[in-house]
Amino acid sequence: MSDRFALRGRVVANGQDILDGLVVVNGTAVEYAGTADGYGKEWPEQVERVENGFICPGFVDMHMHGIAGSDTMDGTPEALQTISRALAGYGVTSFLATTMTAPYAELEKAIRNVVAVSRQGMDGASIVGIHLEGPWINPRYKGAQKEENIAVPKLEDVRRLHELADGLMKVVTIAPEQPEATEAIQWLKEQGVVVSAGHTGASFDQAGKAVESGVCHFTHCFNAMTGLHHREPGVVGAAMYHEQLSTELIADGVHVHPAVMRILYRVKSAARLALVSDSMRAAALGEGTYDLGGQEVHVRGAEAQLADGTLAGSILTLNRAVQNMVVLSGVPLAEAVAMASETPANILGLGTQKGKLQAGFDADLVVLGDDFEVQSTYVSGRLVYRVQK
Image: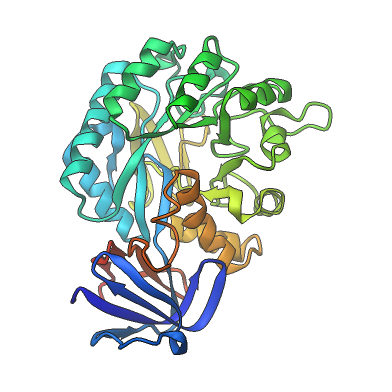
């Protein structure tokens, strides 16, 4: 495919749903996105017509551990490239390589690997940073994380991991009620890191104080946190109450009921609700038994569980998360797409280059069929995935 080409068809982007739309790509950037009859320049020689589907911005997964048999914590270039290639097949063009609670030596290895591999270039979706989920969490709300590796967020450790990440540490999930957490939150905020409350047993008041200290985001809302009660709103209540703050949602219909998914969307709006997969290595592999941080995970149907029934991440992909928001929760398609693209890009400070189809933005785009199956994916104008017909 030449450096300048166009896709014509239904375009769902930037809050709009254009039936006869056009996206023109020139090199690595979008040259034009809008109505086909509104483009006043000479059309590229190569124009691909999209039938029975739509064109939208590439998805940004800000919380995903692994897929296709590989995990960030494997700490190898091969694992990250496998993840990158697999994600492209599900419409993801950018992602945060997400860690989990583990000994510091393993976390350091994983972080070094992400830094090195991201600089070499990716085969599919691009690594745009690291999401450190654990080890600074509450043992009572650990989910599928190993309790023996949970640690107090001592500032010296926080500083060390941040330095190792060499500017790539974009999100840190932390339980704000844990000892020494406030100092860590304040320091991370000063470094420009998105500090997210998650795996937390905080009360509503504690969550409010954490927001004052620098928490600005909530990890997989409703899951692994204190729930909403009319006399004690908990962390879920804080996520809803602080309207200006963003939150994640695992929209698989398993982690959160579709009705509650819709309630959260109505409270937060598409602008502050980011769809995430929280996927683990079993994603895209089907039913079976898999490893997650040294623990056996059993995948049956749409669920991944530890032996005791605890949900262990997910096997969700973002194209299905978008579909679920539309089909199960009645969210308009353009807003569901935004929650998987524009919203996470904005949360991560990438909103001037990713998440939208707009002139000058990175040419990260995906073509989805009417069944939400990915037909093709482009990263910076480069075709990285096309469905085999």
